[in-house]
Length: 242
Image 1 (cartoon, rainbow, N blue to C red):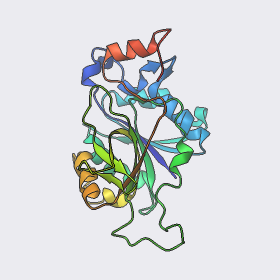
Image 2 (cartoon, rainbow, N blue to C red; image 1 turned 120 degrees about the horizontal axis):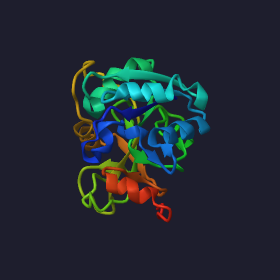
Image 3 (cartoon, helix red, strand yellow; image 1 turned 180 degrees about the vertical axis):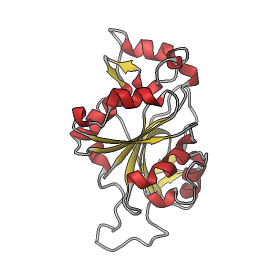
Image 4 (cartoon, rainbow, N blue to C red; image 1 turned 90 degrees about the horizontal axis):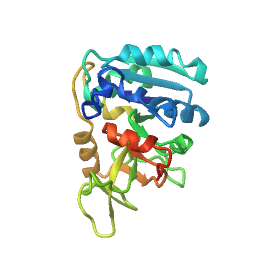
């Protein structure tokens, strides 16, 4: 399985730090955010990594190179202007998959130092527990890792139950926030043209309505870094990492 790290965003709320440094290269606990992801992917045996970039993208390429110093093979998908999440994934599809194999996508500006990417490898199975193929219109097309609703997003994104993720507040379901870590089938993005701007959220909501969106709760350390104050707090000597 291949993985993509999203690194094309401008990071407006992180200014002025991102005026001179791409957000994924900002350091947390002495290591750039994006390097935490690369090392954890390699640790899980996932070494073929695609990174998209736009704002100050050359700095990302210069810092990471071909990935060999991390034990990885890094390819880059350059965007003249950031194409949004789905647009960036669609442009990178030729680097990510042969047309059928699922792949991992993780945001370059979240801090998840202990995430085990090996757990992603068998999330989108083509067969059920009895070995029977899932009908194409019933199989999950994405598997999302959800987190408890942070203070800045109290309403959450989807409801999680044994039936998967849904848009409504179903009885017995727990409302959670998408943690910006997911496994996707390429069919989700083939309708988007290379270079087209496209958001991911509407696509996910559409598949949730179809009952084809799976997921689980991630209980480990997770921080979505949006402002210099958040970054400074996380880097403070006595910062609580949970």
